[in-house]
Amino acid sequence: MKKSQKIIVFSSVYVIISALWQNHTISIDNKVSSLMNLKQEVDQLKAENVSLKIELNNIKKFIDREDQRKLKKCITIYGIPFVQNENLKLVIKNVCHYIGVNYTDNCVTSIFRFKNKNKQFTKTISIKFKDVEFKNTFMKKWKAKREDIDLCKILLDSVYGVNVKFFINEAMTAKNRKLFLAARELHKKKFFAFLWFRNGRILCRQHEGASVEEIHSEEDLQLLSIPPVLEYHTDSDEFNHADPDYQNTASKRMKTDEPSPS
Image (tube, rainbow, N blue to C red; front, side):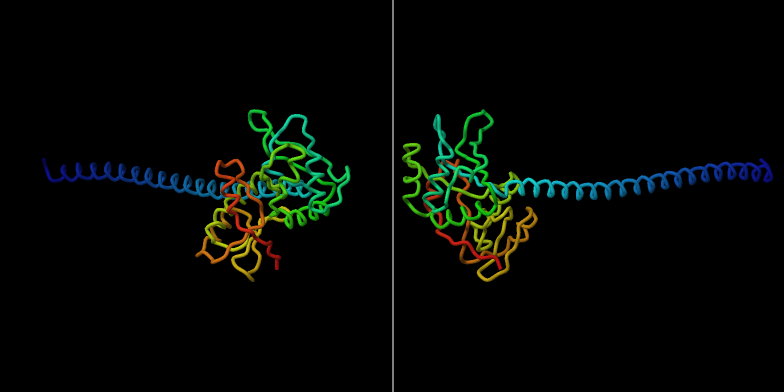
């Protein structure tokens, strides 16, 4: 093959290869551009997802606050067994009489016993008072009397013929109750000194003299997980009344006083 022919062939091959390379480069650029666009879309979707999660979380918090607000006049009694033809108003009337709260029939607007998934009555009673002031007065006087060892006998023997340990707390939503129980686990481990529930709020103090902190979420509990303090106090009755070891746990519960929020 002559030199001129070789040059022509080489030139032709070069043109073909150049064209193929150019097409390949364009294809790669297009794919890179598509990937970049997809990445932007994914990043945008992630940002929207984060925003929606925050918005949903805020909505859940708002709904729970509203649900808790609806319970501002309510208390819950744990541990009183169900009996046929019981008079629940007589129970709360006896409690009011013993702790020194003036009771009339219009003090309570509703009272009922909870049922479990099998439609059987539980040991938990819900009571709604006529107003928040009456509920606060009731809870204050209950806390002053609740350690009385004769309380159960006086209140229940005449009604149920049994002597059982029972507890009374301000009513909580399911979310707040779960959060409070989680807070109590940290509290038992002495991660903070004081824990109580008042007017729909879970409150705590790190130590005597510290400022009052409100617990809103599990994240707040994580922030409170610091080296333990030496003393611990609680201002809520025992919740684990269904636990087989409940009576032993309750009997060992420390006598405590409610700290005054600063």
